Image (cartoon, rainbow, N blue to C red; front, side, top):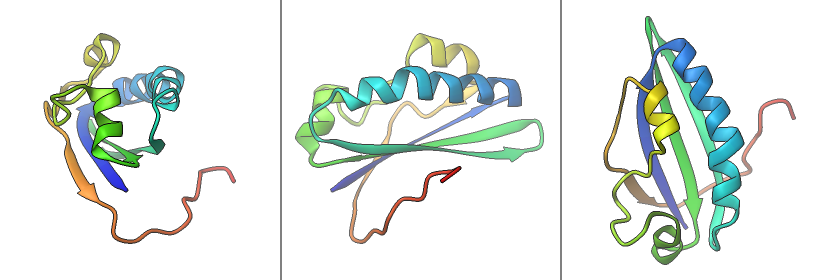
Length: 108
C-alpha cells in the first residue's frame, strides 16, 4: 500500500472552506478511482495560518496514476481549492506503508 501526502496552508476561514471542498468534492471523486483505499484531512492552527495535510491510501502506483495521471508526483489541486489556500505544495510525497492499525474517524 502507498500513502500519498500533500500539504497546504490557509487562513482559518480558508481552511474551513477547504475542508468543505475536500468532503464535498475531493472524497467523492477519489471514491470513484479503482485502487483508492481512503483519505484523511488533518489541520493544525498556527497563529493566523492553518496547515492542512491530506493523506490518501492507494493499492499501487498504477492506482495513483488513475487519479493523478502520468505525472503522479504533481499535486492535483482544483481551482476552487486554489482560491481558498494561501499556499500549497506543487508536488506530493509517496510512502510505502510498512505498518498500520485501524483508522479512527472523528465522531465515532
